Length: 518
Image (cartoon, rainbow, N blue to C red):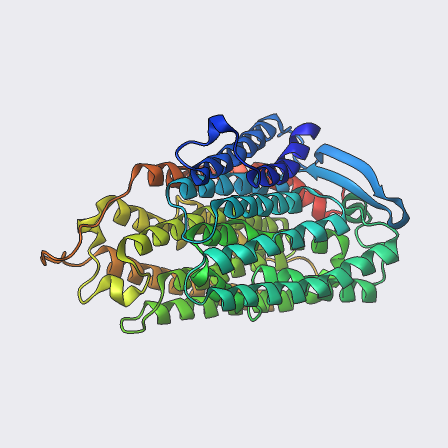
């Protein structure tokens, strides 16, 4: 188990270096580009297989216990250690990251985005995977920061070199926002380490803030929270996200929405809640207020983009929808209750599956039509996707109803539990204020249903054109079935059997909120 977790974190880095080397003669295939893309599929597939084996070997009877741990001295002067481990909170995110990266590599093998050498593309994809996996596996604050920052450079280049229109501006906006937030976050992490004498996240969670005064906790939560809120993204620190998603290639959007945004909310759960509980208690009402503002803002922005004549980009619309969905995650965390935090963690996974699928589908639509502009796609009566490409239309409708939280699919449970947690927040938090937040969030669910149903009506319904010059629309192809089917299956599985995830997260969340006591 120790070896598996270390391999999962380090393996993609080794694969990234190997991707830059010449391919062995027997593995070149039809071209060097095809060989390196095949290499990407092989490495990410091996990492996914290792993650599945790790999950199967995980002791589900004790999900609150750190497992597969490695603890090695690294910088003794600063008391920094190479400390790895997983529990019921981090394991689902680890597997989700491995799965989405493999599906992106598989998709890219058949549909490589236009841009420079595939070698650089595969190497950057693998570095991105390693940084994300490390974020969910490390148990040292400084290592967490390094892993958190490690993903910025590969994502910047994926957007800037393989993106679409306005890619340079979007890439710069992405990296400037996240770097500035990270600088502030580093100050908060250093403050915790200096005041407590350790950067070990397990020891700090067990101490539960007793080594810091309330004022120190408040300052630490404010600094760390800003950095995490930018990555989440929380309104009003979200403005980099729509531009980044609109410009990014399909696989960049999938990974950005599916796993990179989860790094921010994971930091709130793993670091802020257990390590500085008093500071978090002071800021919880403000976090909840920003969360519900994001829910309403994201939904209204999507409605404006979905309106006929607005020239709304479908990728941009789904990016704004992420602001709203991540608002539910932040609302659950702000409740500081086991129910709310479990809902937030469930919504994290559900959002990764559903929004990853949505970006895959919108990327496929853009490849077929040459645009993601909703007015161009739908025309006067609608794009009639049900009639022109029924399987693609059916998948888009499925992803839309999953995203709006239809009962029986994964999107339902996370949002419901987050609102249940906010309905009865932790002791000391104002219940009338949180009841107001829940009411606003409930309005957000109605607005979410409204814009997603408008999108389905405009893209999937309508009268097929009879003009002979209109090109034939290709339906779902084999490689797309292979890339998208796991996301569809897991969305249904998590919706019908939520205990698969909640059985892992619930004991770990209780222990985390209780200060390391099971």
